[in-house]
Amino acid sequence: MIKATLSNEYGQQFFGLHRPNTRSGFGIIEYLATLVIAAILLLMTSSNFRFMVDRSRVMAATSEFHTAILLARSEAMRRQKRVDVIPLDSKDWGKGWLVLIDANNNQRFDSGDLLLHRSQSETKGLAVEAKLRDSKKSYLAFDGSGRPRSAASSQVPQIGSFIFAVSAQRLKIIISFLGRVRVCDPDKDGATC
Image (tube, rainbow, N blue to C red; front, side, top):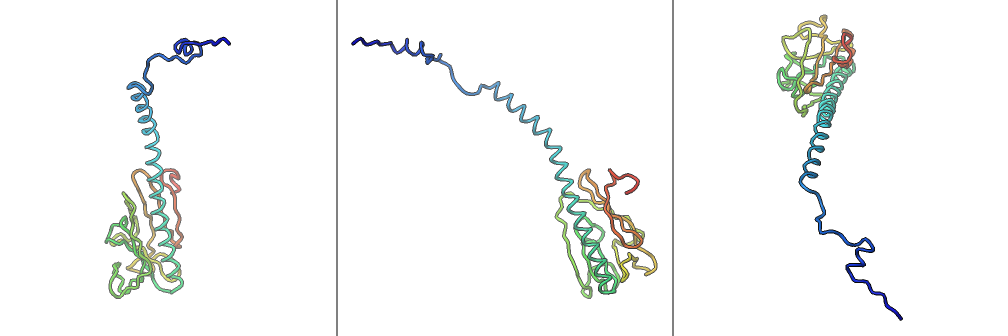
């Protein structure tokens, strides 16, 4: 019996097993190229991500305020009493709002008032601009018919709008003469908003 023996070195070369003495893994050039590509992708998506986060925040705050307005209107009609929506912090609607029956008609929450709803805004960067007919005090009030009314007179409507903004994202709530409430985007809807 003849044994064919191959030297270890010859066998490795013959069968393609011989490898030159090199190191495996990434070099500094490959690592830096990967970092540059990751940074470019991150920059491209971060502006879109920021846009979506800001849009979501402004939509949530606007929706919550819209719900508070509808609650005030429905409670005014149900109770046949005036119901007010006032800012939580005197004139800054961005910190939150209250829905209440204002017994002494001073547009503040006092001991004799009945609180129906409290919403404290936790929306980071929220700014709210109120443009109402009676701008002496910050409030929105509905009478028993569901129409907006001023604090001075039950015959003068408290109509107007609120613009909610987080960074460049804005939404507008408009209160009509009859008390109807609608939401629009002033940047997309143009003159109809």
